[in-house]
Length: 203
Image (cartoon, rainbow, N blue to C red; front, side):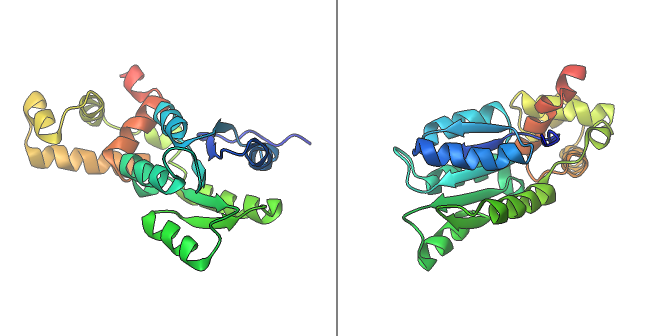
């Protein structure tokens, strides 16, 4: 029976081994998740910039930049709200797992993956971090949408304050409300979700 499609962003899977890439993708496909696949770190970051993933699955040993570096870049861009897990057939020692967690990973798995266990643990990660639904997203006020639109244009909070003729404290309050309503932890995440939900287009 075909799984019901999930309502949030794609699963980003990064692995330079085509067979492992396809095998991991099948686990998510069977669970009803949409996947986007990358063979190296640079391609992974390009895909993440196009659409905020619901989860990133990173092989550690990649050509070019490593999975650790990709994790760091994703954390810098999207904050702690994006679940990131490492998979590896080589870096499987305890200190490898610790290194991944210290860099910002949420979990670490050795290859070959156990599909059932992996699927269950990924489902829990995704559900804990999923953004609020569109009904809540649409609860942004007109002024909050003004602030969000200017942030999306690349303005700093101080520049938003000047453009809208409001105090810096008021801008900070609006940003806090935006983050809470969208269920995210950074301005970059808020802008990404706003674009994904067409909030800025509607404005």
